[in-house]
Length: 159
Image 1 (cartoon, one colour):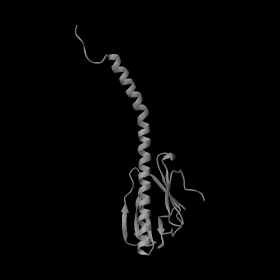
Image 2 (cartoon, helix red, strand yellow):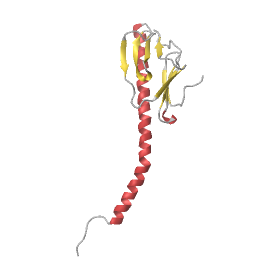
Image 3 (cartoon, one colour):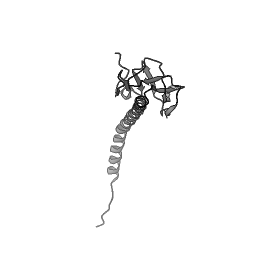
Image 4 (cartoon, helix red, strand yellow):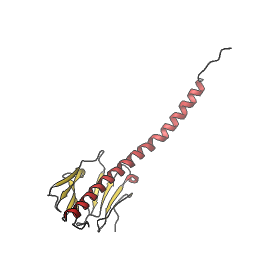
């Protein structure tokens, strides 16, 4: 008697059907995960810029600012000496990929300045990073003392 090895046509079709079902369920989840990770990375870059500006302000004993690029926060940002974003550039961050919307509170401000003691020297309280869906949004909060934190929120706090 000859034994045949392999799969039957029915076994192959069932396996293929299961594979299609798993793929259609998993792909949207991977997209959401990738977008969430991208927004987390962007928020971490913004926090790194603010931490650099704060530590340089304390080290130099003079104001240092995180300044939006000429086209706004979506175009990138830099850390500069001085409160008016006209001093020496210490570091530059390029525009983020896939352009999230970035807004500030109060609106339309183009810099976050830290004073010589490391406290916040201007009115910006937060930078809102808006992703593809509101569940991906991040808010970088800057306290009056200069403390920086990140929260998953769909807008800057109202207080």
